[in-house]
Image (tube, rainbow, N blue to C red; front, side, top):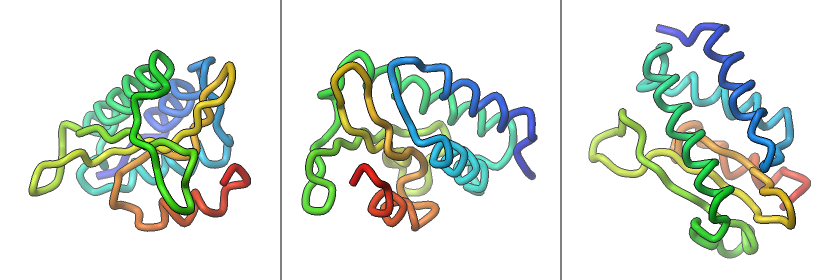
Amino acid sequence: MTVSEQSLRNAISTIASIKEISMNPQHLLLDILALSKVPAFAEDEKFNSVLHTVTKALLEIVQNPAIGDNLKNDFAGFKSLHKKSDYPTDPPHDDLRIVYHPETGQIWIVAFGHRYLPDDFYNRIRASKRV
């Protein structure tokens, strides 16, 4: 199964419409595409459910930027919020994460997606101009 183009477009529009956050547009696209490729999420109904979980988490961050855990080492100054999708792997755990930096007036979203898939998530964060 694959995620439809319409669901991908809706996902981009939904995340981009949250005015209190900022995100590199290319990273937004990459994160949406990566989520759509996770085998457990790779059909419209499941993908849309996961997107809803991510959107709710982003709005939680907007309401309380201190909610996430502080990251260390290469990522000091950044925060990470973990959430569980409706389709966690075995054993069940928080399988989604959002890495962000609280900034004055806006929240800079560095990346979001599955915590373990794809495995280049943290490499992309390191390559970000914000890290």
